[in-house]
Length: 208
Ligand code: MN
Image (cartoon, rainbow, N blue to C red):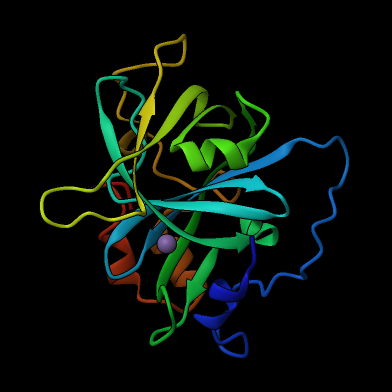
């Protein structure tokens, strides 16, 4: 997995996003990074990121994760991101790829159920456990053939498994703040010189 596509899309003299040192070196205990970034770009979505082989495998989840095992959430696989991206929160300037406000919504570690993640990717089914602040327990990503007349290789579904962390709680609505800075999107936009009004459209009404 390479970061070519990630780098090609971005102008690092303009965007504050990390370029990625290219070093896949692991620090510490060997646990794998998990993160979700709430991203108010042209459309609001939640970027799920799972560290694997020195990059972050990435899926854009338009409606965000659901704790309800009956709910399947569309997850579009996007380009691999550098591991350093899991620290990023801020404003991507207007005119740049992904322009808008990025919140570090959740972060922690993850464990694949099957050690060979490449094989799981290939098979189109990744079962895993999340150890985040907001998302925990057992989940699955399932590759689908896309919907209707628009089959797309990048289309997956994100589903919570039944376990003690499954819940009817609407986690995106009830826990709308940054896991690290406790800020709402509008506050991140304000601090980063972004479009506050647009960012606030991604915050729950009445929380600002
Ligand atoms: Mn995004």
